[in-house]
Length: 245
Image 1 (cartoon, rainbow, N blue to C red):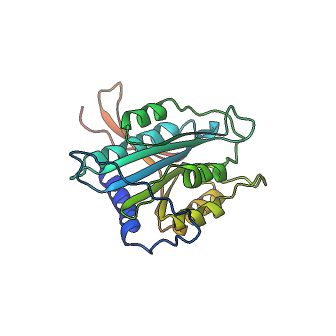
Image 2: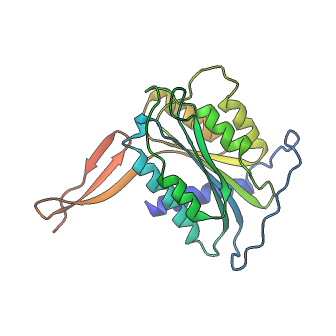
Image 3: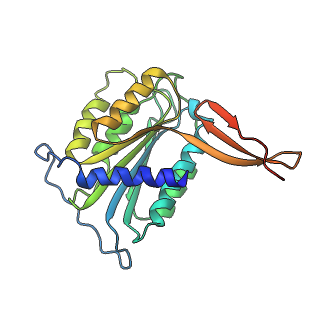
């Protein structure tokens, strides 16, 4: 799992540096210089995690958080350690207690983990979520470092497709902006709703990112003393054969 996450992160970052040069004509000429970080010799990196926190994510949210923390641990264990900032966007939908909440990109990794830990699943309309609003916040409102030497990556987690409410937000338009800013968007499907999977693949392909289904593994010791490996992939669950106590 860790090796897969490492490959997933590295592949996304390689696209940032060796992919098609960004088209900057439509982007305001804003460059945020990276701060000097004594002891941090690696590349500068901005990573924004975006995830659905509606009620349908109740069974997946633990896995999403574990995935995010796993990515953060992988970055920290890199040699040299990158100068990394993290941002978080969580979204729901109309008639929920909130439409979106976000934490701007920060080098305070503890603050990002605390923000993440406080998010719970609730609300929503079952088969839709405001993906377009979340993408707008992540792509257009986040305090990205637009220096050419900074890698910019989004990880989008969710189990439902964007809704069709005409409120001015459009994830397709945000993908155009993301490409202009050279932001790679990777998508992780927490469900297998056919149209949602199609959209998640479309979002990843638009910026040269990667698509995958979320899988989460854990060890469970039963009353018989045997330890089993429990693997969940969206709505499916597998139990590996019993291992010796």
